[in-house]
Image (cartoon, rainbow, N blue to C red; front, side):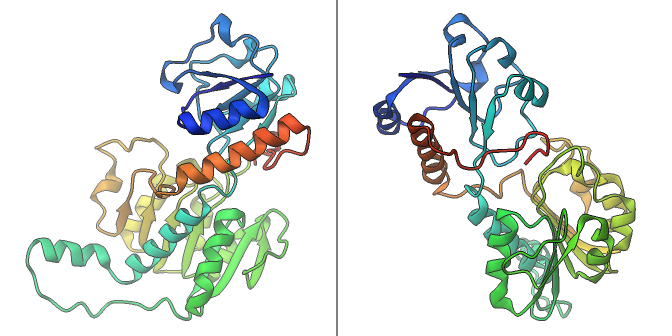
Length: 314
């Protein structure tokens, strides 16, 4: 049987299903994990992020890491590449709840939801005549992967123009037009709503810099469900304060948890959520299904799904 280390318990029934595939399972909670002898022979690691305490360079038999996350920026890239460890992620596992969240936040920003909730708390009855329609707007996605596609699919009922940026500007289903990464400023300048949905890599770090932020239309809306480090947060705050960016919905930040003294908390035109957009009641079922299918494929020697190119970072 194949020795597998899990840092999360998927429940008795599910673990039994995996054992029945031919796995010898060890479960050690991710928060308590350190390298010890019982881990030495593990061939498979199923985890999110044990890497700050678990030194995988000591796991000489490790051949494959299956992540429960979509992002892979927590994985020690050098060790994985040096030891030829395959890495697979939970690609698509959270795309539907995140897509719904993006649609929700887009409408909340256009319809001034935050202000209405404040008025309700203070029992203020006052008409707001500054609400906007989504119909006819241009939505620009920076990144056209699984999350962006699921979101664009849902937006297509709103009668909007959907643009995207990807590496080479290739066409993607549900998008009216796609631009290459070099032409990001052109796409941003045409968009009323900009959604950041690109993986974090060395190449995308600070991609949405001062130049890109300043290329946005006056009064654009900005939504980030990707990673905080892709954006120049200081400049984003400045543009929000000036009203150049009319509003933002942010689920990710450079530093998480977000410090209490971060000026972003004070902004009336920012909606802040604590890296929460991926949550839904189906998250564990979907995540388990993806992991189970890959464990089955690995045992049978068939192709693994969602293999990550660790050089590219997605």
